[in-house]
Image: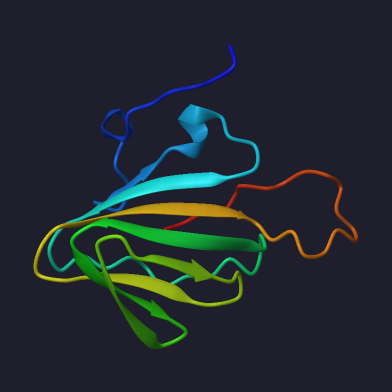
Length: 125
């Protein structure tokens, strides 16, 4: 088969918001998560220094704040935010539900010491 399909609502929710799609889609080079955030929800602060994953957060519904290295970034529907691996990030949802698509992949700037495998372990929203 040349494709794999999954509906995020069929994937168990983690941390009361996150639907991790990489496992059911069996992705090899990218992490994909849908986050449906209840009012007042916050993700845990984290970075991706260990796995060298950069992330893009795309807000597809509502408004929210993403705190990157203690800098609050206000987001509204349609905004996309790139975050480098070493930066700490945390979603702070506002008073209404919001929805994000989170995309994670290894940085491709330095191939030295790379064995050709892109690790997806440690992907967290």
